[in-house]
Image 1 (cartoon, one colour):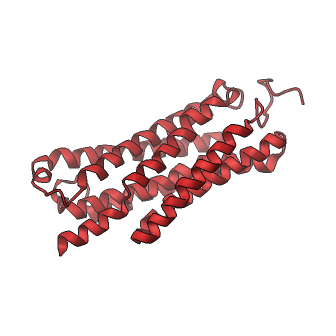
Image 2 (cartoon, rainbow, N blue to C red; image 1 turned 90 degrees about the horizontal axis):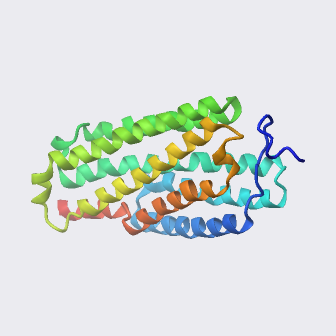
Image 3 (spheres, helix red, strand yellow; image 1 turned 60 degrees about the vertical axis):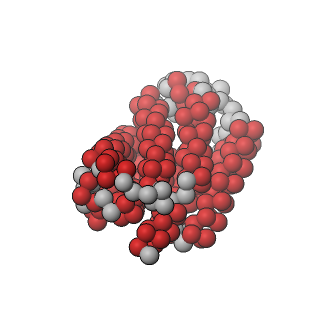
Length: 256
């Protein structure tokens, strides 16, 4: 086919997908996801299961790009990688939203939270479910629904980020009195870091879909890896290093 750079027609890829880049991220996501599975079972932090599924989405998605390297006009691997790489971060978000509620419980600082702890998870995970469903439905119904879903994701992540920052600012003096056996700081900053990375990635995806199939971003594969693959891998590694399962054990120690 010769229309891979024809802006008037829809084509699956406007470049030849890199086998090496896809293979590297298949291995990287397999390693970090495998480690998350081990950590989650060892620490019984079942709220991280959506996060693990997100990692599996990324892993399988880049396998789809390997298959597309063999035949870039094959529809099934294209749909596989497009859908899974689009939806993976929404599953990350579900677990990340739950972490803040557990931090509020650990510190006993609910009075400093803008939203009651019992509502934190319900509100933000509810918004995440809406975003996930819109992005998934958009694969059949059109790019505008995907863009809408991504905007919902950005909106709720932005509100979540503000909620987390305000919790720290309003409870600054109180949090400073907590001993070193309550490791709220490293987990809160891990939330900030992962939230920023997912926000940047979501903004990139919005711009990509607004530009359309013939847009500059979709003509150059490097942007997918710089603004999606690398950032999402970093999200997983950050929570490997600062695993939220430690929050529960710290809470039980505090109660004891």
